Length: 256
Ligand code: URA
Image (cartoon, rainbow, N blue to C red; front, top):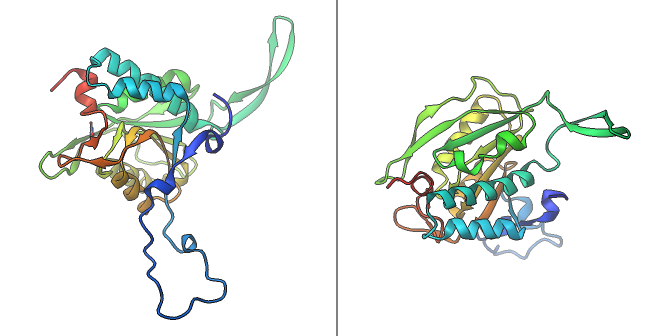
């Protein structure tokens, strides 16, 4: 996978912007009115890869007939593609040289001194970024677990392995398979920022997301980027994404 994420991915933030909140003025507009986007709150940047394999593995995961092993491997493949996109142009590198069987080559390495911080949100986040540990030459993984109250749709933490302190320079990948209402991912990003991280260095990877989550992230964290397999249209009355994937944790682990 080559090329910059912004060039290779469909930039989708327009799809989630709320309709203009600027009503027409009773007075005539000034000669050169500022463009309304200049005064809107900043929005997260959303990237949806157009790679056919990304679409293929998402389709396999969406299929309700895919059993847990197939669902898991489809999510892992999708996660691999999203991960490549999310770290493109973002990982720190160092220059070096290696001896090949026939000579010496100038080389670029991913800097092992600056490991990426990976934050999977349990349970399904584990599956989507299964490949992170093997794809990233240097990473540290800190798990967090949130359970959703099915009546209120509020998420509350039951596990938090985050380090006490982070820095604005730490590059952080948050993995939440389904960004539905955004309740969980917003709490996690708020927690990361409260420990010293900067939203400019936080990238969220998700299989499917919905407008309410993107709206919630965009309103709070203007510099954060989301890399998603797809943006779906809506949520149902239980807060599930439609058409979505169903309950990603249950489908990945064969539970009901
Ligand atoms: N969590 C899921 O697993 N699926 C959804 O559609 C929304 C939240």
